[in-house]
Every structure is written in C-alpha cells, then in structure tokens.
Image 1 (cartoon, one colour):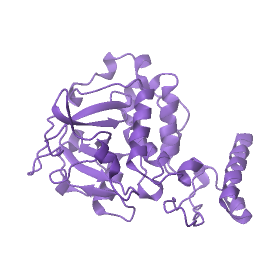
Image 2: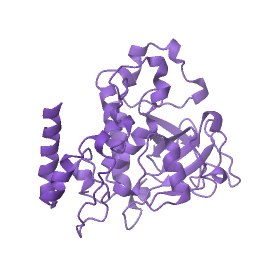
Image 3: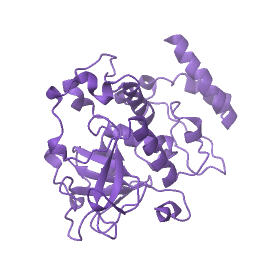
Amino acid sequence: MQKALFETINTASAWLIKGGLSSALLFSLSACSHAHFNKKCKFSVPYRAEITNIDSTYNPRVPPYAAYPIARFNREDVVAIAQREWRLFGQPIVDIDPKQTREVDNFPSKSKPERQAGLWQRIGEYWWIGQPLEAKESYWTGLSADNGKIFPAKNDGEKAWSAAFISYVMRVAGAGNHFVYAANHSTYINAAISQSPHGLKGKNPSNYAPKKGDILCTGRGKSRNIQFNDLPSKEFFPAHCGIVTSAPHFGTPFGWEIDTIGGNVEDQVALTHVPVNKKGHVSSKNGNSLDPRFPWCAILAPQYQQAKDTIQKKG
C-alpha cells in the first residue's frame, strides 16, 4: 500500500510541477495525499490568467484536463460525457414508472448491471473521482463499501450512486468550483436554491424550460411531493436527478419530450424520456408536473462558460 501511495504522490507531483506549484507546497501535499488525512489539507491552486475555472481545493483524483480545463466548462462536454457513460452500459432506455420497477428479491444479483464485471469498477470511479477527498463514499464501488467488503444485492439501496454519477460527470467536464460534489442529490439541490457562491442556480420548473446540460430533479419516497417552494430544505431528503441531453423534440412515447440520462436507474446508467409542452417546459404554470411519474421539484442550471447558448440552438 505504501508503494502505491508514493507512486500516486510522485505522479501528482509531476503534473503539479508542470502547473507551477512550489516544492514546499508539493511536500505538504505528500502528507495529505490520503483521504483520511485530508481534513486540514486544502490549498489554493495558483492562478493562471488563461484559466478562470479551477477548483480551489487540490484533489489528486481529478484528471489534469479537468483540474486545468483544456476547454471552458460547457454544455456540450457534459452531454457528451453523460452519453458516453450511457453507451458503456449498453444504451438502456427506462421509461417505466419507478413504482413499477423490479424487486431486488426477484432479480438475480449477478444480473444487476451495477454488479457486473467492468461496470461495478466504473461505478467505483464515479465515487472515487466525483466525491470530496474526505468522503467515505469515495471508496465505494457498485458492489463494495469503504471497508472493501462486498455487500448483499438486497442492500444496494443503501449505496445508491445516482448523485455520484452526476458529480462524476460534472467533475470530469471541468466544472471545478462551479458544482457542489456530493453523495446525495439534496445537497446540491439545496445549495442551488440557496444560491451559495458556486454558480449553480436552482430554477422553478413552472417558469423555466430545461436546457441541454441542465439537471432535472424530483423528490422520491417520503419526499416525492416536495416542491420548489419547499426548498431549500433544512435537512437531507431523498431525490433523483438526471442530466438533460436533448432539446425538445417530437418522439415516442410522449410526443413532445426531452431526454435525460441518470445513474442508478434500474441499477445502470439509463436514458429516460420526459414529456414537455411545445415551449419545452416540464411543468405547468401552476407547478404541476406534465409527467405522472415524476413530480419535478427543481431544475439546476450550472454556470457554463459560454458566451452564447449555441449547443441548445443545435437541438
């Protein structure tokens, strides 16, 4: 383990030196490279004039192309990354009501996508890259917890990874400090509604039409009927969010609809069609969702660094 740790430190040191960090800071980072020792280890990355989107907390798990974005944080990259992960899982489409999804006890655990070879490790990457350094969840995978032990398939709801997927996509797309990385959706939903200084803005579904790259959210379980005016909440609430990956178009099964891609949908990354009106709204003016499956509570609009919304116009 020590050998692997020092290899990680040396690799991180090499690209950090390239970025201009001092040797004194590199020495300090070496002592902070493990998540459990990172409580007091937060450093500002040196400012470079050509880069306006850098996470203010050093994280050795973030790929250099995301920590020092080659391209400005934009909708097209977020959509492309979400679609790439969807293809990896076989491009499943899930349009059934969540209330009608399969029961774990009636579905063989070995057939669950999240537990299949190649995919459970990928979910581990969602956790590892998408979560804050100090989060215990960063050590989870599609079938194991932070202690390294495989948990029973019937307990997979305790390790839901849909928010980890959203966080991963935003992280590798170069969101930096323009997103709130978390193990649950309610954390960044509440942050967006409260308009904390991170650039993530919460929009009311009754008067805002989601765009490609936005994040569409709904409460679930005991919080199924939570509404925009109930936010921000004082505490955690169960929710689900998906990334909008298309402009409004006419198709099946709903006619006018948009596409969203989310994680942990039937234990996989899946595409879901969402009904909209001709103006692209998912809810009526009085706040009633147009989708009987999902009572939408919020739309999260990241602060993309584009002069014009050219991606949306392409449809």
